[in-house]
Image (cartoon, rainbow, N blue to C red; front, side):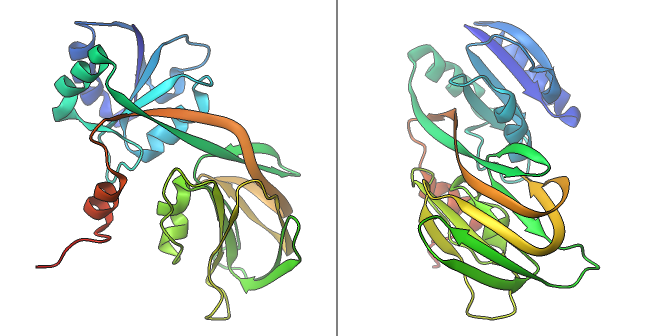
Length: 258
């Protein structure tokens, strides 16, 4: 099997460890920092790092090429194994004993171009700016108005990222929904809403504010259109993988208190 191993800059040592292990049984065709993936043919992409590294690798992966993440970051919602579990990974690979998990992208179109996000699209004011009036129109429905610092539109994958920190719900990855969350709204009762993923979301702002895609600043705009994209990534998980265990261990959600 042809395998590409990608790591973030400061995780080369961990990457070398995996390369030494994996190359004993498979052909490592690429080994390098996360920005070397362009035009590389591989049967599997192994990513060493945290969720940020997985996000960047996912956007470069060819459609259908599976990814496996090894946690070398802080939380690692998108990673599947720890470095200590490399032998288990190799055994799972040998036996083709994985669960396939599809994660879909959202697309944002604006005067700044068309971009893909795995987590979220954010429109928000500068720290020194005033609150902004925002109109959010959900396809087939009338508009919602927010007077707030901004708004977040997230995929299920992004529900445990920025939107969670501003009070949004945790959404299981298998759900076909989008989540809309205002940032610091003036009215206390303004909360997140969850809509079908096939609905288009149009965001109109009173003035130009910042547009961010998966945490990366693109520039300023007054209007953005957000919708589910046709593109997916495939993450390989151990058969024992359990999402409830993940959110309980990483976030403390649903943990039993004794």
